Image 1: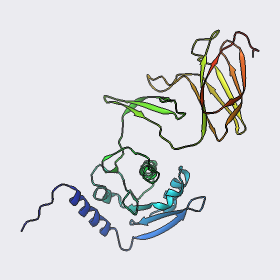
Image 2 (image 1 turned 60 degrees about the horizontal axis):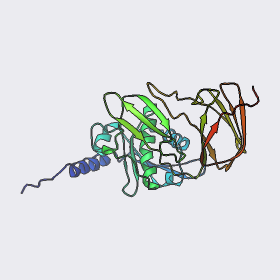
Image 3 (image 1 turned 120 degrees about the vertical axis):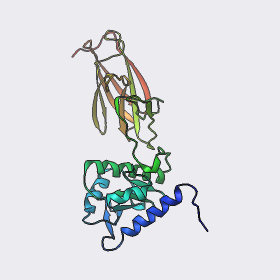
Image 4 (image 1 turned 135 degrees about the vertical axis):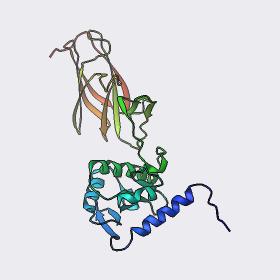
Length: 274
């Protein structure tokens, strides 16, 4: 009797099982590390001469929370990644099936650092129930791109981005970060200076410190970003002082401005000069 497997999923699962079986033995070990807050970072090492501390340092330096203790980083020889991740083009992959696992190759490089953080991003999305970007086999989608513009497309205080690709489509990277941090967007309108306020220098002071920005649309290749000035304010609800130095030489000061708003600032007819 012949048994026919329909589809590639079963074959991929068998190959993955064989790859893991081949990686067991003398090289297999569970290594526990910790982040700066004492959260556990678990490694399932299935390759020889692996520096788990290097992988741990990459994860410690990245934005993370309690979810870091709910995933296992399985490190295998690079040759086993295609079988585990379901394709010859795969560089690594993430499995959210409990226990959540990131499969990455052994080694050290800037590229491997990027790959590890990319897959950890999928774990972040899964743990915090954020809709992630679907990909085949967890393989990074590489774009050949030259132009990028940034701005708050939906006026929610989170900066978005639009990327154009060579001989391909444009991609909207919509910022859906879950945060309670405060923000402000400043739309400057010049009357003595140019209408868009380009070149105006803005200083925003809160209890947490001072930030500076220059009004510009300058961005990436053949791209123009949102001319509005965005300041992230952390937990501060009030900006103690906003100072604008207009291209005309006028200096304008605003006091005690509330957070989480889009504020239009019109250049006055007369103000103290520099």
